[in-house]
Length: 178
Image (tube, rainbow, N blue to C red; front, side, top):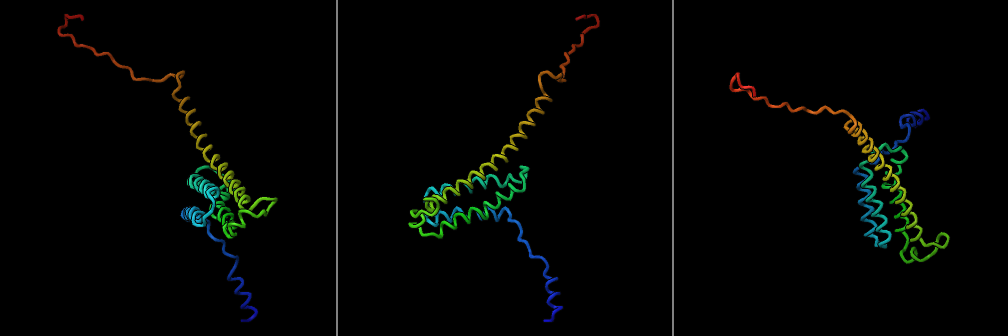
């Protein structure tokens, strides 16, 4: 391989390829895997309950994300929580021996279990805030539509209603007046 071949190969390879964004299927699969992992790893019920709360809220939020008008940072946070933050948080804890992780202080007198619980609570609070923002958009649309309907059909507005025309009876005789 000559010097010029080396430069040519570098030009052909170009910039590194960026992986594609995870699809809804990828995200759902990551959440399913996380729910199964915490149970199969034999983690405490406190950890399992927190992880399930997060995955449940993510499942409720992600389908609404595209229509909610979320910032790209919020969208990224939801996807990253499902595919990266939550798996890494739980994975770091699972790699530790249970008896050591649950009893030995590692951070300001807290055991790894307490550190994990704090991290899961933080993730849950973040996902809850984004979920509330998503639902607030839906609620705002409902209120705006309600105001439109109230203005359109309010009691103070003149509404044209069909008028019933009284039936006229045809006299049986021209001399009959009524």
